[in-house]
Image (cartoon, rainbow, N blue to C red; front, top):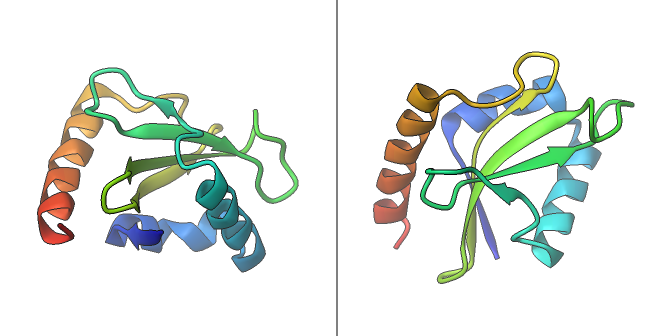
Length: 108
């Protein structure tokens, strides 16, 4: 499996997960790539609740990603803490979906 990060995800990552937590997330998704709930009307984009920095899953981080079974890639799109936002609004989801389209073209 290949993990691909958007620049936004990379920029935000250190704010939410340390190296060990990120490695644990990657290992979890290696075994459970479809673990996140598919966001309605997103074209398959998933949201995964993840514990981080001493907080449980319910108060932790939300990982927004897309799993492409063929060619077995996970695209990390963005992340945020539940305290900042509960759900992604429709306009943001639309922008993320457009970005995903470009990524899927690039990494065919």
